[in-house]
Image 1: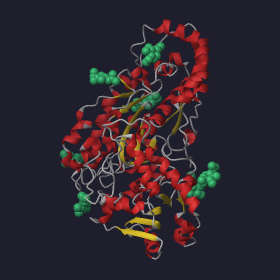
Image 2: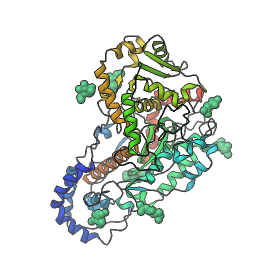
Image 3: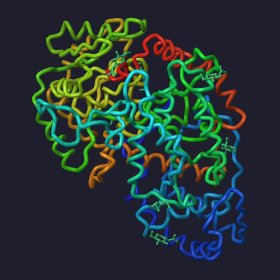
Length: 555
Ligand SMILES: *[C@@H]1O[C@H](CO)[C@@H](O)[C@H](O)[C@H]1NC(C)=O
Ligand SMILES: *[C@@H]1O[C@H](CO)[C@@H](O)[C@H](O)[C@H]1NC(C)=O
Ligand SMILES: *[C@@H]1O[C@H](CO)[C@@H](O)[C@H](O)[C@H]1NC(C)=O
Ligand SMILES: *[C@@H]1O[C@H](CO)[C@@H](O)[C@H](O)[C@H]1NC(C)=O
Ligand SMILES: *[C@@H]1O[C@H](CO)[C@@H](O)[C@H](O)[C@H]1NC(C)=O
Ligand SMILES: *[C@@H]1O[C@H](CO)[C@@H](O)[C@H](O)[C@H]1NC(C)=O
Ligand SMILES: *[C@@H]1O[C@H](CO)[C@@H](O)[C@H](O)[C@H]1NC(C)=O
């Protein structure tokens, strides 16, 4: 299994400027010719635009220069399995590509948004706003209306005892990222209406909210209908034709398994959004990705913390740095007796029998462990926080605990390490502890034994790293702008525009291998049936039995 790494986001704009400055001189002459030649066609780019060029040799120079200047590492990802279909796209120099203006605009060093422009589609309201307007229907278990207020952050957190700071805290639903991300995008400083210069194109479809309302009970045609209508709408757009959607992305604030129904049997879980050919060309951002699909990308679950000014972050970081932590470790969660492979039973037992552990036991349904202030207090009182898998690999609680400055203890590498590669450092021992599920199951190691081996200074070093990461793990309040901190949204957009730019350069060089899409959608679904049976199968059974959608992944 590959992990793609961007510890220091590999493509920093300021570094790029330095290099761009150097190459600008080199391409100056070319640029002049270019602008003169094409100023006439520069306003509209459509798939049908064929640009004839008399000086082809010049454009070839540019490809390699761009490549060098961006230090592209279009990663190993294309060697991953299921999505590779080996249709090499015909190489053409960048000036003949329909996206040539976007590539050329990267070199404009007088433009602070060069290479960062995002075009946001203006979707029909049925794909976003109507869902909010009908919020009562969004979930059979929870009244989601309260969670859609404050730009998707939910109501201001009730905290009568004053355990948290007065500003920046909200009762945020764990599946609210669709809305929060959209609202963050509305205030993104490099939005453009000129799709021809966009580094990436955003489709503000609330994929997570949309499927949640139909997950229980509706037949497959009802579950798939909005997704299919969206695909049809996109296919009809001029912007789509430029790259067949390879430059498009969207966000679904749920786990990938909710969008990966493999058959058309009504008893199977979820919709088939991620098996629609159009969508298979796009990048899909979700709170949990599939380890087997190259177009899935994981972004953090929303936490309760949404700073609206730099000082909210600085004060919070100081607070979790100084706070007294009487417990070595803690666990907030419920057992999963119905899941034979779950180690939660052992974890609960070990915590109960250790005087170093603080346990907040959750029952299904209402309990203290769903009260944000109680959970955040628990995490602030411990050095380490145990984060075993729940119904699927990931948990929101990983992020809640890290926000509290608690070092996460992970038992499966798909719980975070292979997921949040844009937001967490590659060296996972710098901010977390890994104990394999197998070692817990066989009793080869005890959690207390492992954790007590860390010295005070080890713990302090790791905690400092966790604290350093906090700004990049939260979603800032979309109604305000922060000056010095880049949040989870900023890191995500930076990584995405790099991905699309890398892809465009590869296409220009004839090195691009297209993944997924086209006629192969059915083949991929077939091979997924065999390959990822464990994940999808387990998730399905679990959800069908439990259906505790509102709570189960929170703890
Ligand atoms: C470069 O960026 C500046 C500032 O946005 C803009 O005014 C200028 O037209 C751009 N130059 C080209 C050649 O696109
Ligand atoms: C979660 O769902 C259960 C039913 O499955 C319900 O009893 C409970 O009240 C719900 N909790 C919330 C917070 O909506
Ligand atoms: C794009 O166009 C819309 C509608 O004309 C306008 O409201 C918006 O400000 C424009 N955005 C940018 C970034 O120019
Ligand atoms: C699916 O459910 C909808 C709404 O209940 C119904 O109108 C439709 O006929 C059903 N489709 C199939 C194929 O059963
Ligand atoms: C997916 O992208 C490829 C390459 O650009 C393109 O040929 C194909 O038509 C696209 N698929 C769809 C459904 O648009
Ligand atoms: C995942 O965990 C296993 C041990 O269970 C380890 O051998 C493997 O290297 C880990 N992979 C990654 C990508 O961390
Ligand atoms: C990873 O982090 C640990 C703990 O901070 C450190 O000891 C180790 O040297 C780091 N490894 C690498 C490859 O940087």
